[in-house]
Amino acid sequence: MGLPTRTHWPKGDRVIQIVSLSFFRFAPGLSRLWAFTMMGLARPALARVPGIGFWKLCGSGTGEGFTPKPNTGVYAILATWPDLATAQRQTAEAPIFRRYARRAIECYTLFMQTTSVRGAWSGVAPFDPAEAPGAGPVAALTRATIKPLVALRFWRHVPDISTVIGADPNVAFKIGIGEVPLLHQVTFSVWPDTAGMAAFARHDGPHARAIRAVRDGNWFREELYARFNIIADRGTWQGAKPLQHLGVGA
Image (tube, rainbow, N blue to C red; front, side, top):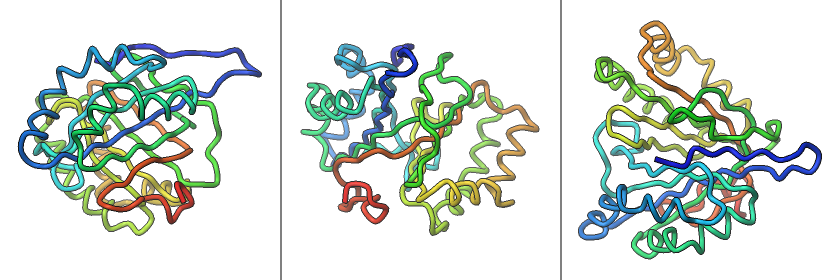
């Protein structure tokens, strides 16, 4: 479990919290076995990284991640940091991040500032909103603990949502990750601006119907919804820089 910390600074000269989300892709064979075992073994090393706050180790689903079937080739580390310099330095130089990078065939990290958040993750409020949505690309993260008795009903909605997200010309990057298969789900997507993201959320399609079903059925034991400004990125994903056309990492 990530550390349940949330740092506050005095108003006026506060340092803005940075959220990093690092993705690692592993080749078939021993590297994937190593990555799977690190879901448990990496926790003490992550907890000791200087400057790290809340953190989570996540696996992913097959395809673009929006399925209950695990993808043994893609893993992610989400973390909070006191400032951008610390986030960029530690995700590149901390021993545990370097071990992941050496084993992976591809790495990609996003650096973000929280603009809004509601809900909890493992019983704590991990993100510290500091900025209004900017004019550039924005990210949306939803995280939920699904009640076991309704997990199958929830997952029946997900393939339709994934198809709609994938077909939306506005979405620049998307992936589904999670801490525990079937029960702990995180969806993450990047959009060129808040208007494009809001238009998708308002559309009366599979996404809206799934949200109504969740609300009507009280399917989640815990949920969190967060929005971010994208500050920077590093690395590539599927051989490209996903946000370069939006002016990030150009």
